[in-house]
Image 1 (tube, rainbow, N blue to C red):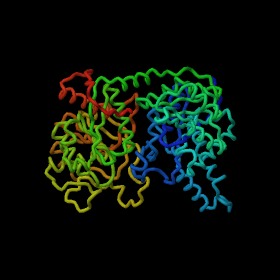
Image 2 (cartoon, rainbow, N blue to C red):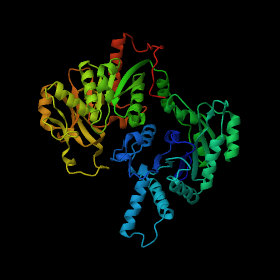
Image 3 (tube, rainbow, N blue to C red):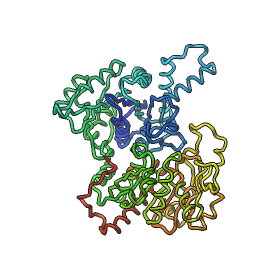
Image 4 (cartoon, one colour):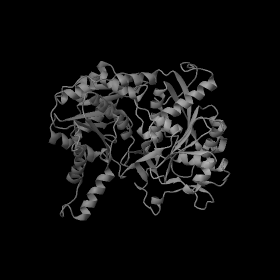
Length: 560
């Protein structure tokens, strides 16, 4: 493999509309280059003024993806980690809020020696510094793929676009490549695709001073050669560099489609790299299993953000990964916890093969979650509770098994007779919300003989956390006496990390977020075993063996 020692930069921008899949494109290219022997780092530049998304409503921003080091980041970092199978850190997500916070702090200290602090050069220089810091890792990357959030034309993203324009001048054209993700809409009444939105988007980018080298054109169907030639002509891009990024069945198919159109070859040629052909056999096998499942199961997800699926993005993807392990299609049944409270659990959950209660904050919908948990516990339906989901399971057990009818969480009510969930000791006195929870990776010691231990196959694990409340140790003995199993504890034994119910086919609650560490070719052990338990229940209730798929069943999948 012939490549020089200079770190290369790939900049991914977006145009026309948001949500075109810049993060998937950046992740897919990273995977292809990694499979060709390169060390890859991804970074996301977010133009919002929040320091991080930790205090943002999931309905506005979607999921908060927590890293090992405790950073609360954009959900695109989940795509980076899943596609490249690597753990990232705080340097991989930069927001305008972080940039301005750093600059204003320096200005107040007098670091600028009386100079007028301006967007250019101070903001753009700080952006470039954050980017180049990734190139100074001990394990220096061969290429950094930087995704610029927002859409070309947005005021908020202009400093980032100016910074990457400057990088192109400073590093030289052979060390930088610009990829623009755009939309080619199909106008049904006219019966044709329209290229004008792409032309105008590239025009705006060129007015800023950036000429894209590659266009990734999102469309519902493959683009004809004639259409690609037209786009290339009007956007000053070679036809071979106009890549059709059509809709696919699963996002994990995107790298294969881009490779078929030689995206990674175009990038390698631009950087004058001689690289081996990527070995995508394991990825192709995984995609094939997603597209051709041997059975279908239904998993209920009961939460309060179910109207915005991106709030549970990592959970959705973890089920895709776990489904591959069982060669099963996991159809997710979205149930509002508030609907449960109004209509009853049986109405919404009677046909499911398993139930997951995800994390969340605030009292709204909690009683519905507790009612749903009681239903699946008594009906022997496989259950997985995550963070608040585990806490709700403990509350339900305390109320309906231990007889503590007013058991609840101190998070929601201060005047409680039985606060079975209480504030962590190190959270007392904390008043600021941003970045102050128990965040990031912490160790957990598993109890041998439990389903959790069987799933992991090791005694000590490390998982990512995002919470302030925990099981109240004052109630441990009472809960255990009535059948609650403490399946995992912190190494010092002070914190309950995992709970189970012994006389249940599969009932597990965890204080951490296992979905954050699941990978397409390495499904998380708990999701893998949860899905297997759901498959077993499905086979018993349906009277079918794995491989018998009911073709008449109308099922919404998680992979579209």
